[in-house]
Image (cartoon, one colour):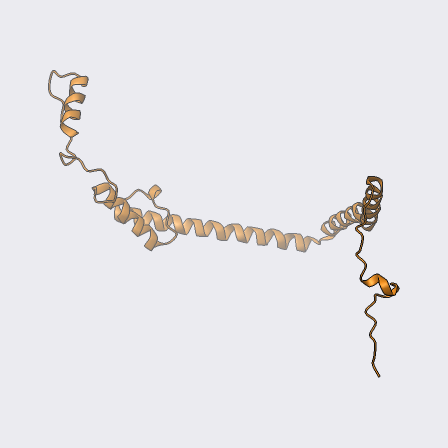
Length: 167
């Protein structure tokens, strides 16, 4: 006995399984109707959004109004403690920079490190640069000595002499 299997989709006639499926075309009016129907269903899902948002805002306002005086005081105290901690940290950093500036001779305004090691490294780099040992510091032919202008010479002559000697 042989068993036959039916590979036809449900409801399709026996000869329809091998027939090529025709591509369906729509007119612009049909497409517009399909899109309008789909948009209408999506809008219906969120029709009460504005109402719910308004209610949520009113609820939040009511919750804030209902906070007890104790809660308000606790919130204010927490904010003040945070501000105090921030000020203490800033003061400590300023004092540390002042200490490093005093010990190294580098102006405090040039130091921006967060800890003493970083500030000392910055101060050393600034000192090296100021002495002419830093990377990229221009070298002069005469060692950086300032020459006094010759008596009786004009500024133009002095510049020409300097230019000719230093180029």
